[in-house]
Image 1: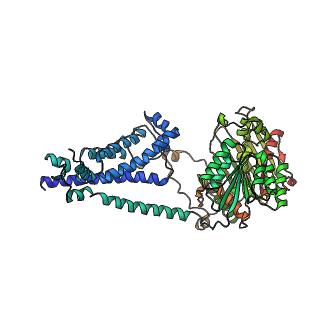
Image 2 (image 1 turned 180 degrees about the vertical axis):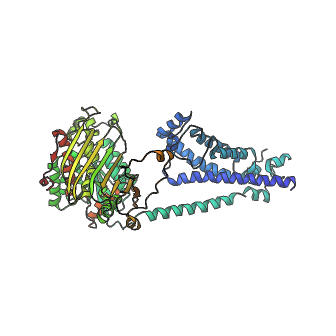
Image 3 (image 1 turned 30 degrees about the vertical axis):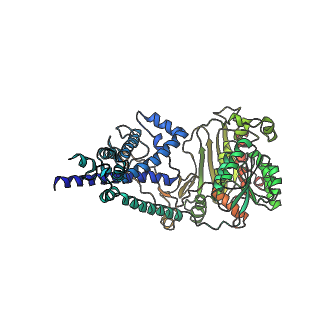
Length: 161
Length: 473
């Protein structure tokens, strides 16, 4: 395979990674929206580690909790759309990293911390959240939106460097 | 990699300012079809969830003619009932009455107007009875000491009545309620809502009556344990003026808010909580108690603001056609250990049931005949597999006198509606002439006799016997 061809396949693979992570975000957002009464309270309340007081404060303050719920549902949905469509890809990836890191530090799988909501696998420091963050870091650093995504059109239309 | 290739992965992508070409469009929109796939999957998922939900829900009968309904008492319990009623088709809310006009009344009227009901608001129930001439039914959720006057006046005004339990804090008043219902020929349902709960109905009709699965019931225990709670407060700006409170029989705003704790207004936790479950003891046993022994007191809260007992333990004795039954009940309001449930223990099995869906199982005694037939007929689920014992447990020496732990069979009936909905539906369907009341006044009266006797026994400090004539009206 010549170098150009290889680069193209590498780019397609990265677009695949972006779309798959986007799908996950979009459905996480859509499912919560469809539930109608979804709340982050349970997740926040079982927070462990040094940031636990902040997360518990969020859960116990109804105005804040409401904002957190809305931001989660619509944020996940918007990030998902951005990643799938390759629209404002870097911003979407950065927002995705931020939101998942919040989940991670809320309930980190550190040795010695136990959670009442059982996890579906076995994790020590690294869990699927962290893997997804790593994926998003890669997506943020490669311009996949300008290869296959609305960013390509936007970029052209904007006429900016 | 060239500058352009770094940006776009192919030579044509990264040149800004150049006109969009076909390739830009195709690649720019390359991932849009993924959204189509996502949308199709999402629709499939929504359809699947809807179908599953529909298959779980009972087949909905046509609601029948619309009924004009009023709510009398729009406090916490009134709100619970209203939320359940809003899920029942065929009801037209016409009026709400509550003496806390600035808070309960406004809140409830606003809620109903949001649901597009044209409701009138009343402070005094007599004005409501004068003003509303086309009501079919009224749902009463006022404090216990008001039940008799509200119910009797509504019945006399020609309304069918759903009245919250406890029927009354005085047996004399409760008796007058039964008599007025008889005289007026109107329906009076008392709010012991477990009597219409499909899980409880299944236990009574199938497990106890038809199959006799748990054998001869010899002992029962039940409880409702609740965490310590501060008294209910109120926003100062919404305080009811003293004159108005006195007009309706409340010495103070605190007593208005916390009436359940005060003698003359409510009956304390044994009445508020115990009444529901002691009602089930008698229902499942098809019997009335012959005696009760009880101990209780205000052990934790300030007796000045908690006249009724915060802790009560009572033992009922029943005489059934099969023999003697002793039934223990406790309610405490300082610790929530094990929550609330009723536990029927027979010589062939145990039935543990709670209004909370988390508890509902039948356990077969190891000495009892197999339950394969009942599993096959869907009375109970197949037993849960006995879990592998841990090494430590295996190492523990089994005492020869110990019996093996019985198999657990879960109840097959799921119930995910508001707890009060089936009981209210039963009432409204009875008003339409389609069903019989599950808890008519006579039944509510018998339960009031059973429950109020506990407070009497505590005061007397001895075992009190029931005279069979006490249950008759």
